Length: 81
Length: 261
Image 1 (cartoon, each protein chain N blue to C red):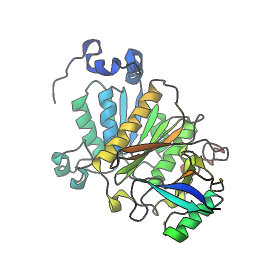
Image 2 (image 1 turned 60 degrees about the vertical axis):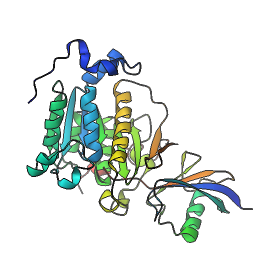
Image 3 (image 1 turned 120 degrees about the vertical axis):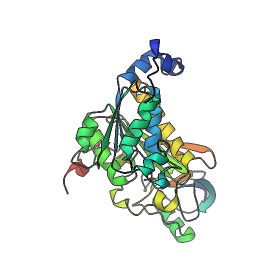
Image 4 (image 1 turned 30 degrees about the vertical axis):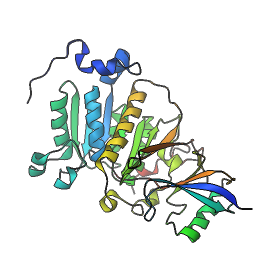
């Protein structure tokens, strides 16, 4: 069964900028599977090498589980100053 | 040079000292503190200004660059004269800050910060402010600060967004606990390519300085969080972060950026 989650992008991802919350349905079991799914379905340019995931406003490893109703944040760090 | 304005009894800092969170005791601690501002660009310049006005005892300003015209919209310490003179940023910043607050010590360092000199610079300060514009310098700073047990405050900006993390070595996560991405430098978008809004840089700097003031006045940490800011939408979201026991820097204490290549 597909899980209804919210994906929050915090990075410059294509035309996306700033904090955006997107409702999303997924069968991904982990943050890593979700990222791979989004790479395939939404062509997001993030990879595990240059980004991090947070679930419900807490940083997690890429193998952390994703549950129905979760808020999953994907971000890459900012270097500007 | 303007004449010194005497501040008997601490009149200069009365509004800050009146704050319960700082008070006379906190103001005294600030006056006894040394801070290294590493990079005097859009966020470093704003940090230095807030810190100088707040009455830090000693500010060390490190930057290797010269003031250029394209800096003026985002780098609030500089003016057209600095551009005409091709003034080093650290020296132009020191001149401006001395005019704002001649009661504090301000030491410009016009130099490239590298593995050869960062430990000596960090050793002179109680806390370091990150005003760098690249990850190479930040991971170098992370190594030097964690090795010395000195707190530092990460701040990054891109477009209209920013991130802030206060690093308290031995207590909370360091930068590499969150982003172990040294290879990512050069693959992530930069302000040169995507621009930066001056208010976003000032917001990042304001939050960094607030975190620094909390540390320097002895406030207990209220959790360990990476703050994410989006000034265009006017939103801020904290993300809770923990130390990684196997972190190469603060876990295994392998300070690889400090070692010669």
